[in-house]
Every structure is written in C-alpha cells, then in structure tokens.
Image (cartoon, rainbow, N blue to C red; front, side):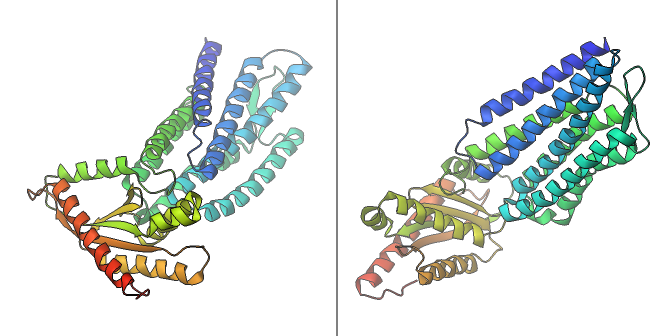
Length: 383
C-alpha cells in the first residue's frame, strides 16, 4: 500500500515536471537567463524525485548491493534536493527584481554552498551523521539529521525575509506568487518531515512549480518581446480595469511617440530600428517606479500611467534627460527624439477612457508638430 502511494505521488510529480519542461523549452521569446534558471530548478527537482523514489523502492531489499545502492542514491537525492530549493530561491529573486548581476552574485554564493554541502554528504558515507543504512537496508536518520533539514528548508524563511525587507519594490501579484509558492512547498515539507504522512514534499513542490509556470506564461503573454515592456494586450487590460473602478482615483497618462523613427529604419535598417525601440524602453524602465505602468502601445509609440500625485512633468524631464545623455555619448549611429502628450484621467468620473486616449493622442501630435516646426528652423537642440 505504501509503495503504491509512493509510486503514485512520484509519477504525478514527474509527469507535472515533464509537462512544464517540455512546454517551456519551446517558449523562445522568454528571458534567456530566466529560462536557464527555471530549467535548472526543473532538472534538479526531477532528479530529486527519481532518486527519492528509487531509495524508497529498493529500501528493505536484502543484499550488499542494495545497501551500497541506498547510500549512493540517497546521497544523490540530498544534493539534488538542495539544488532544487536553492535554485528556486534564485529564480524567485530574479523574477521579483529582474536583476541579472544580483542573481549571478547570489548563484556564486549558492554554488559554493552546494559544493561544500555535497562534500559533507560524501563525508557522511564514512561517519553517518546525516543518515545511515540499517542492517535490514532501511534509511535511518543520523545525529545531525535536524541540521540537514534546517540547511535544506532555511531557504524559505530567507526568501520571506528578503520580501519583508524590500516589500515596497514588489508588486502585489509578485508577493502573492512567492508566498503561495512557499506555502505549498512548506506544507509538503511539514507533512513529510514532522507529521510523517508520506512522500508529499515533491507533489507539493511540483504543484508549486506548476503554479509558478502558469504565472510566468501569464506574464509573458502581457510582455512585448522586443522591448520587455507591457504589450497592447496588457494596456487594454489596464484601461479596462480603470474603466471599471467604482472609486475616484486620478492617473496621469502619457502617450509617447519616437520622432524620426522612420528615418532610422529607412537609412540604417530595421535592426537599428529595433535597437532604438529597446533603448527608449530601457530608458523608460530606468526612470519609472515599480508601481508605475508602462507599455509599448504599437509601432514606435509607448504609454505610461502613474498616480496623479506623482509629478508627471518631473518624470518626463527625467526621461528626456536620459535620452539627451545617450545622444551625447554617441554610442549609437542614430539620435533619439520623442514627442509626448499627457493629462489626468479620473476613474468613475463619467469620462470614457477611449475618449481620454484620443485626447492625449491629439496632445502628443500637437507637441510633435511644434517640435517639427522648430526642427525646420534649424534649432537642433530642441528637447
């Protein structure tokens, strides 16, 4: 009966991880670094699931071969388990901050830790402080078994502390994702380690991975693959949300259009045109707050939305200054210019969001016309 439960939970975990792995490897438009991290988590988790099952399957079978195999397989399991947990921690950190440099430093620390831990698991084969194999070939916890559990599961409170220390930088959806991921994983760990209900760690962990994967797919569907900003779908979702609000809130919404973008495409080619779009998107992302909304509206147009109490003029000046700084560096074969129009939209005020968008679109084209007239007069230092 117990073997049947282990078999079912293992097959369920393996099947879930395999589905995620096979589907995710076909999504080439996602962040490459994110893909590598998530693949590392999936591979480590699947390796841990298989080795855990093998150890439970052959446990109790008489023979020296079984005894040696138990030591080998359980040692592999302990290393793979920690790899899965700590790589998952690195992935969650990257998903929250999208900071490659930060996570690479984190991975260096994790790699050193995992190497030291793997060495301690090898040494355990001679001293048995983590585990031993009983005369009847069953797993038996060692004197430092609790220390091993603390090392394995301490990553979850570390993630929680990281969230609490930087909670203002997280979006609500990110906090919910991380807490939910930790709760599912912790539930399996508690039931398995403390209550002894059976092999529930990996079904819970694979369920958490599945939830995380659905969240990734949802986020990717709302991102513009070229610029990394929100796409038109995410903007449509945003304005629908605004139009359905029952309370009155003020939002400053900006429509941005890249000037002379067609000239970049025609003269330098579409590759440089794509680079120009990425440059503007990077500048926008560097200037806005985590809680602000930014999307590529279409073509060479972008849209921003911030709470009205935030000085939108100051934000646009920061973006313009960042563009001027890049132009002065001459790192690209083109110059960046932009026109924009903005105004304040009040939710639940009776004004249609679509009428408002037409309004700021006209303001943007008015600004573009003014800039064109100045350019024609030869004043190239126009902002």
